[in-house]
Length: 312
Length: 303
Figure 1 (cartoon, rainbow over the protein chains, first blue to last red):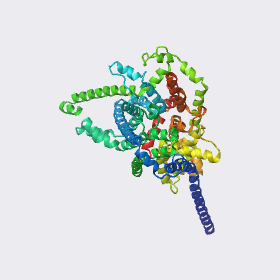
Figure 2 (figure 1 turned 60 degrees about the vertical axis):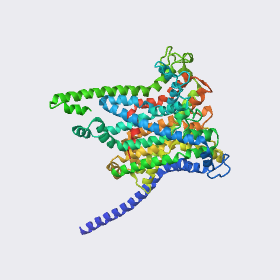
Figure 3 (figure 1 turned 30 degrees about the horizontal axis):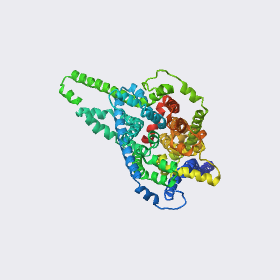
Figure 4 (figure 1 turned 120 degrees about the horizontal axis):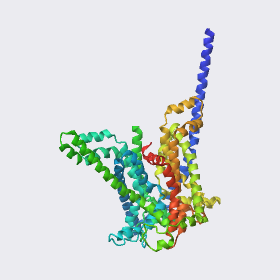
């Protein structure tokens, strides 16, 4: 009996030993297979994102024929050109005003949708998100046609109110307005949907408590809704800032930078200079100017996300 | 504002309740009023596409009421759908999008699984890196990528520029990071007990992924697929840079470069093409709205 017990004990010991080896194998297998599973992703990011990003730094230091190293020559050239400063100014105006209006309209519309009885919200949300779903290149064509100098449907409608024909894309200020309008039209639904999701996560009790304390509608928004939505507002705005700052489709199709470069932003001007003007180094230098603002926005987003990751 | 009147309206409960509900009715009416305004703003361009697409060129140039079709005709649709060129754009777009979706899923689902479950050296850094990659816009990379592929063609003799399949290499840079990111979120929300049970029952990692994770995270998978498809379908900058021959173009670029000839704008056909180009994402959206919205909000709220 003792013998049996001893044997079974030894068998158990051998088994744990084997299990430990098996475990080590499994661990080795695990990290190996994990590596293999992420390898395509790593390769993709390294070859088609990180490498080109660094390559554009290199390109920016070459001359037009890409035969000679010119250091910061391209940047010096850009700083001396008036068009460049125009582009910087326009990019900032475009991105900031478009994002502010998108955020405001999104916030307001989200509240209206939230007010409507729950069973009808789906329908409204569905309709209001349509601008975001249509490929921007396609919807901008419709806007271009709405703005058409001779057949503009907007001018046709406005003429009934005695408002004279507006040069939507012909005049510098109006063209800037049109470009921003189309961008707001396209981007506001995204804000709406994000804010709506955030509004739904605000506990109803907070509003009841505020109402009992005698808060008016403005105080309810300022002291309850906004603090509860702060995270979503920040992250959506930063996302949108990146996307809007780097926008290409809308400006390219609506005005192609015109009239007289008065609507060019970084992306469209980089395309004009680098691809159409076949001065690749100068185009690369232009698009590199997007990096600082993108980096700042990215840092803030990342901070927010890691913060929330730690809370969870 | 409203609550002040409630407070003054005194001690009787009925009156208070009545004014509150009256306030609510008015709030509701105003909400509907503004929602209608915003819906008109949102839907004007697509509706105008539809209106124009039903007009003949003669009716458009007659400059009658632009908001109304007096002689509806399908001639624009017939003309485009029988034109080999347009069908070519459509098929190019369809092929590119479908293959890119497949590539994206094949890369991002295993990677997301590994990053969410199999903690290994550098996995947290890699997850953050994936997210950062998603923030890098296409307009930053198109010039170096163009040059890269041109140089690659010179070195190896494999000409990729001006071939539609070059887009298969480039689009994943837009779709993979985001899809990986939201799949990490979905996978991380699956309880650990589930895959532990599978491992104890002798399942391999691969089996755990295909038998447990993919079925459980199917809604996330659908959302990621929709995202990848719509991004590939809508992408405009890369095909504009990389493809120039008319038989290599995808739909958005094709419509803009071939239907707009100099100063002659055939608006009936352009709007028809734009509407047909907008149709696939709109149809997907109409049928899978909840998944679409889930994917949209997941990027910022998950993780």
